[in-house]
Length: 317
Image 1: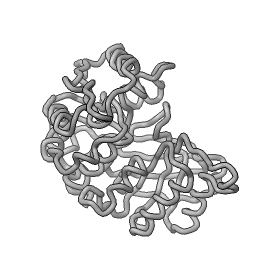
Image 2: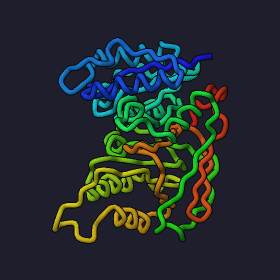
Image 3: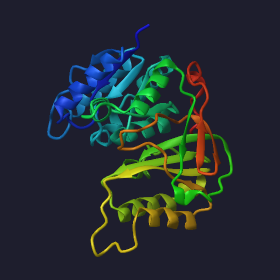
Image 4: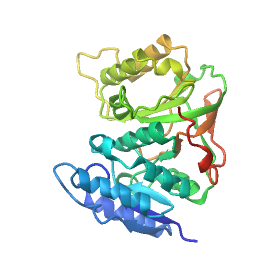
């Protein structure tokens, strides 16, 4: 049976229409039935339509009955409408079998949904940047996406950076996987949309943030007590970083990671292939995972997810 993908724009307006068209064409070429939301290309200020338009698009995605509800792109826009999102409708759609996939700004909806309903969503690709990439879509990303669509995906693995070869990591069992974009996540702290996950595995990624800003956000999460309550912190990809010339001497991304390791008892792992990069795995936000490391090799397993959705509610609290 052909799998049905519903594409909608809950955040920023699509500026690169060529990339969007390439992404839609690529998904069709992969054999999916693709439905594009009626306001996917809407523009209002910097957004894909005004707030009411984007809320309606989310509601249509939830009512679509599609196998996958996939965001056109990230950017900014979901934080503004978190108070009005129909969380119950989205959670019901997920229970019925629609998987919600996205990244970046989509972290806001993923966290809010987890906090409000316990529903599981997927950190994964967007249409334009990923399926519509100029040099063609990334093979690993497409394979991971296909695993999700076909119900085959049960985990992921990666190699930590060479400098982490001696890192000792105790295995983690039955921990809630959560996180996403660091900036978006941190902006939810102190709101009803920040998931109160205890003993979880927190993964983070970001783009275009200087090392000092990354550290400042991590410090906020640390001082709020969030980091010490986790079983592991996992760094995904941090891209587009610029050190300030003549100012950041000896202070870079590695310095940030090292300092966090020195101040936390929780293991801090690096190298997860997820973020604003072509090669990205798909991660079930809100699902229970097992995590183990052997030398530089890390394995994260969530098991078979299809058919288990109804039992996942309430685990985040």
